[in-house]
Image 1 (cartoon, rainbow, N blue to C red):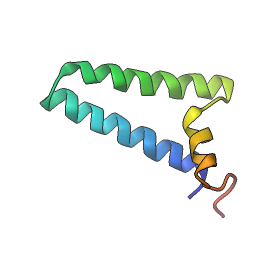
Image 2 (spheres, helix red, strand yellow):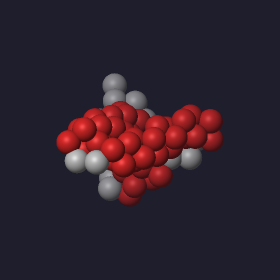
Image 3 (tube, rainbow, N blue to C red):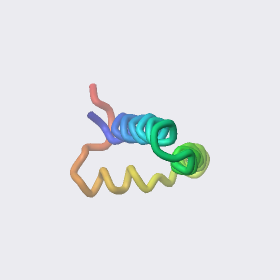
Image 4 (spheres, rainbow, N blue to C red):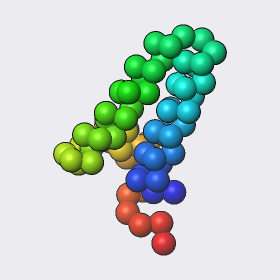
Length: 66
């Protein structure tokens, strides 16, 4: 799996988990959902993604999966 796909998987997981926590625990978890969404939006325009940097350091390969 490439870095791009891992970023999408992690972001999607964070959003779903925070929505569940907001429903069952506290609505304040929606702030985390908003943070993830804002980070995805800014990375689309700037190309800077902290999660991609973390995944690179963990050894996930960049580039195409094919």
